[in-house]
Amino acid sequence: MRDKYKYIGPVYDFLSNLYSGKNIHRCKTAMLDVETVSPGDRILFAGVGHGRDAIRAAELGADVTVVDLSETMLRKFAEAQQKEAPQLSIRRIHSDIMKVEEYEQYDLVVANFFLNVFDETMMVRVLEHLIRLGKADAGVVVGDFCYPTGNLVARLFKKLYWYMAVFTFWL
Ligand SMILES: C[S@@+](CC[C@H](N)C(=O)[O-])C[C@H]1O[C@@H](n2cnc3c(N)ncnc32)[C@H](O)[C@@H]1O
Image 1: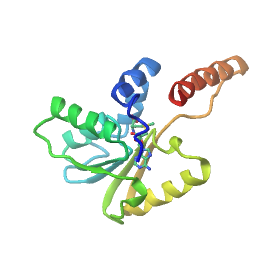
Image 2: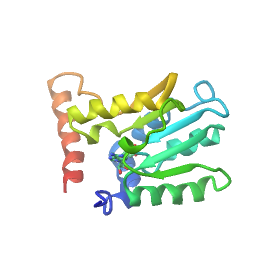
Image 3: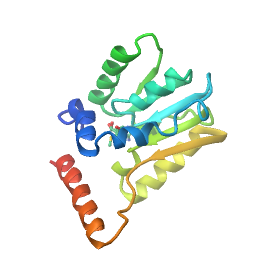
Image 4: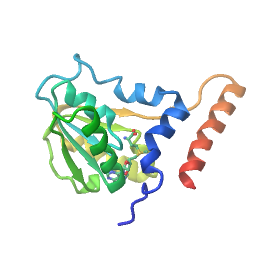
Protein backbone atom coordinates (compact mmCIF):
# COMPACT_ATOMS: atom_id res chain seq x y z
CA MET A 1 0.00 0.00 0.00
CA ARG A 2 1.17 3.54 -0.81
CA ASP A 3 2.70 5.35 2.16
CA LYS A 4 0.77 8.62 2.33
CA TYR A 5 3.30 10.02 4.80
CA LYS A 6 6.38 9.24 2.74
CA TYR A 7 7.23 12.89 2.10
CA ILE A 8 5.63 14.76 4.98
CA GLY A 9 6.31 12.02 7.54
CA PRO A 10 9.98 12.87 8.13
CA VAL A 11 9.12 16.49 9.03
CA TYR A 12 5.71 15.85 10.58
CA ASP A 13 6.57 16.76 14.19
CA PHE A 14 8.65 19.72 13.07
CA LEU A 15 5.66 21.10 11.12
CA SER A 16 3.30 20.35 13.97
CA ASN A 17 5.49 22.33 16.41
CA LEU A 18 5.90 25.14 13.91
CA TYR A 19 2.14 25.28 13.38
CA SER A 20 1.08 25.13 17.00
CA GLY A 21 4.08 26.35 18.98
CA LYS A 22 4.16 23.01 20.83
CA ASN A 23 0.45 23.24 21.78
CA ILE A 24 -0.27 20.05 19.81
CA HIS A 25 2.45 18.26 21.75
CA ARG A 26 1.01 19.59 25.03
CA CYS A 27 -2.44 18.38 24.04
CA LYS A 28 -1.09 14.92 23.20
CA THR A 29 0.67 14.50 26.52
CA ALA A 30 -1.86 16.26 28.78
CA MET A 31 -3.54 12.98 29.74
CA LEU A 32 -0.31 11.13 30.39
CA ASP A 33 0.91 11.58 33.94
CA VAL A 34 1.28 9.61 37.15
CA GLU A 35 -2.41 10.07 37.94
CA THR A 36 -3.67 8.54 34.70
CA VAL A 37 -0.91 6.06 33.87
CA SER A 38 0.16 3.35 36.31
CA PRO A 39 3.18 1.11 35.85
CA GLY A 40 2.13 -2.00 33.93
CA ASP A 41 -0.93 -0.43 32.30
CA ARG A 42 -1.38 -1.71 28.77
CA ILE A 43 -1.71 1.30 26.47
CA LEU A 44 -2.34 1.30 22.73
CA PHE A 45 -1.51 4.31 20.56
CA ALA A 46 -3.44 4.30 17.28
CA GLY A 47 -1.78 6.14 14.37
CA VAL A 48 1.18 6.93 16.60
CA GLY A 49 3.23 9.08 14.21
CA HIS A 50 6.54 10.15 15.75
CA GLY A 51 5.00 9.13 19.07
CA ARG A 52 6.59 11.25 21.75
CA ASP A 53 3.33 10.75 23.67
CA ALA A 54 3.82 6.97 23.50
CA ILE A 55 7.41 7.35 24.73
CA ARG A 56 6.12 9.46 27.65
CA ALA A 57 3.65 6.68 28.58
CA ALA A 58 6.41 4.07 28.44
CA GLU A 59 8.62 6.28 30.62
CA LEU A 60 5.81 6.26 33.19
CA GLY A 61 6.08 2.47 33.24
CA ALA A 62 3.23 1.52 30.91
CA ASP A 63 3.36 -1.49 28.64
CA VAL A 64 3.00 0.35 25.33
CA THR A 65 1.96 -0.86 21.88
CA VAL A 66 1.96 1.52 18.93
CA VAL A 67 0.21 1.03 15.60
CA ASP A 68 0.72 2.93 12.38
CA LEU A 69 -0.05 2.25 8.75
CA SER A 70 2.83 4.38 7.52
CA GLU A 71 6.27 2.83 7.34
CA THR A 72 7.82 6.31 7.35
CA MET A 73 5.99 7.30 10.55
CA LEU A 74 6.96 4.07 12.29
CA ARG A 75 10.58 4.59 11.26
CA LYS A 76 10.48 8.11 12.72
CA PHE A 77 8.96 6.67 15.88
CA ALA A 78 11.77 4.11 16.13
CA GLU A 79 14.36 6.88 15.64
CA ALA A 80 12.74 9.05 18.35
CA GLN A 81 12.66 6.15 20.77
CA GLN A 82 16.25 5.21 20.00
CA LYS A 83 17.29 8.79 20.70
CA GLU A 84 15.14 9.52 23.75
CA ALA A 85 14.55 6.22 25.50
CA PRO A 86 16.61 3.38 24.02
CA GLN A 87 16.32 1.40 27.25
CA LEU A 88 12.53 1.07 26.91
CA SER A 89 10.81 -1.71 25.07
CA ILE A 90 7.83 -0.56 23.00
CA ARG A 91 5.92 -2.93 20.75
CA ARG A 92 5.45 -1.63 17.21
CA ILE A 93 2.75 -2.86 14.82
CA HIS A 94 2.83 -1.83 11.17
CA SER A 95 -0.81 -2.22 10.22
CA ASP A 96 -4.16 -0.69 9.49
CA ILE A 97 -5.73 -0.21 12.94
CA MET A 98 -8.89 -1.94 11.70
CA LYS A 99 -6.86 -5.13 11.28
CA VAL A 100 -5.63 -5.11 14.87
CA GLU A 101 -7.97 -7.53 16.62
CA GLU A 102 -6.61 -7.55 20.16
CA TYR A 103 -10.02 -7.01 21.71
CA GLU A 104 -10.46 -6.10 25.38
CA GLN A 105 -6.71 -6.07 25.92
CA TYR A 106 -5.91 -2.46 26.76
CA ASP A 107 -6.35 -0.25 29.84
CA LEU A 108 -6.08 2.88 27.74
CA VAL A 109 -6.46 3.49 24.01
CA VAL A 110 -5.02 6.75 22.70
CA ALA A 111 -6.04 8.38 19.42
CA ASN A 112 -4.17 11.64 19.17
CA PHE A 113 -4.81 13.64 15.99
CA PHE A 114 -5.80 10.35 14.40
CA LEU A 115 -9.58 10.31 13.95
CA ASN A 116 -9.48 13.46 11.82
CA VAL A 117 -7.81 11.57 8.96
CA PHE A 118 -11.08 9.67 8.27
CA ASP A 119 -14.37 10.80 6.79
CA GLU A 120 -17.24 10.95 9.25
CA THR A 121 -18.70 7.48 8.60
CA MET A 122 -15.31 5.80 8.81
CA MET A 123 -14.36 7.86 11.84
CA VAL A 124 -17.30 6.43 13.78
CA ARG A 125 -16.33 2.88 12.75
CA VAL A 126 -12.71 3.47 13.80
CA LEU A 127 -13.76 4.91 17.15
CA GLU A 128 -16.06 1.93 17.78
CA HIS A 129 -13.16 -0.36 16.93
CA LEU A 130 -10.83 1.48 19.33
CA ILE A 131 -13.39 1.14 22.11
CA ARG A 132 -13.56 -2.63 21.49
CA LEU A 133 -9.76 -2.89 21.83
CA GLY A 134 -10.05 -1.58 25.38
CA LYS A 135 -11.01 -3.60 28.44
CA ALA A 136 -14.50 -3.09 29.85
CA ASP A 137 -13.33 -0.23 32.12
CA ALA A 138 -10.72 1.17 29.73
CA GLY A 139 -10.30 4.83 28.96
CA VAL A 140 -10.18 6.17 25.42
CA VAL A 141 -8.22 9.39 24.97
CA VAL A 142 -8.85 11.52 21.91
CA GLY A 143 -6.71 14.60 21.45
CA ASP A 144 -7.72 16.58 18.37
CA PHE A 145 -8.76 19.92 16.91
CA CYS A 146 -11.91 21.56 18.25
CA TYR A 147 -14.34 23.77 16.41
CA PRO A 148 -13.36 27.45 16.32
CA THR A 149 -14.70 29.55 19.18
CA GLY A 150 -14.84 33.28 19.96
CA ASN A 151 -16.23 36.18 17.96
CA LEU A 152 -16.60 36.21 14.17
CA VAL A 153 -13.06 37.52 13.53
CA ALA A 154 -11.51 34.98 15.92
CA ARG A 155 -13.48 32.14 14.32
CA LEU A 156 -12.54 33.26 10.83
CA PHE A 157 -8.87 33.51 11.76
CA LYS A 158 -8.92 30.04 13.35
CA LYS A 159 -10.64 28.59 10.29
CA LEU A 160 -8.07 30.10 7.94
CA TYR A 161 -5.30 28.83 10.18
CA TRP A 162 -6.81 25.33 10.08
CA TYR A 163 -7.19 25.36 6.29
CA MET A 164 -3.52 26.33 5.98
CA ALA A 165 -2.61 23.02 7.63
CA VAL A 166 -5.17 21.05 5.64
CA PHE A 167 -3.84 22.56 2.41
CA THR A 168 -0.26 21.60 3.29
CA PHE A 169 -1.31 18.01 3.97
CA TRP A 170 -3.45 17.92 0.84
CA LEU A 171 -0.39 19.00 -1.20
C1 LIG B 1 -2.42 13.11 11.46
S1 LIG B 1 -1.21 11.85 11.81
C2 LIG B 1 -1.08 11.95 13.58
C3 LIG B 1 0.12 11.25 14.11
C4 LIG B 1 0.29 11.31 15.64
N1 LIG B 1 -0.77 10.64 16.35
C5 LIG B 1 0.41 12.72 16.10
O1 LIG B 1 -0.47 13.20 16.81
O2 LIG B 1 1.41 13.36 15.75
C6 LIG B 1 -2.18 10.39 11.57
C7 LIG B 1 -1.39 9.11 11.71
O3 LIG B 1 -2.28 8.01 11.58
C8 LIG B 1 -1.71 7.03 10.72
N2 LIG B 1 -2.82 6.30 10.08
C9 LIG B 1 -3.69 6.75 9.17
N3 LIG B 1 -4.61 5.81 8.88
C10 LIG B 1 -4.31 4.74 9.63
C11 LIG B 1 -4.88 3.46 9.81
N4 LIG B 1 -5.96 3.07 9.12
N5 LIG B 1 -4.32 2.59 10.67
C12 LIG B 1 -3.21 2.95 11.40
N6 LIG B 1 -2.62 4.16 11.28
C13 LIG B 1 -3.15 5.03 10.41
C14 LIG B 1 -0.87 7.83 9.74
O4 LIG B 1 0.12 7.04 9.12
C15 LIG B 1 -0.31 8.91 10.65
O5 LIG B 1 0.88 8.50 11.28
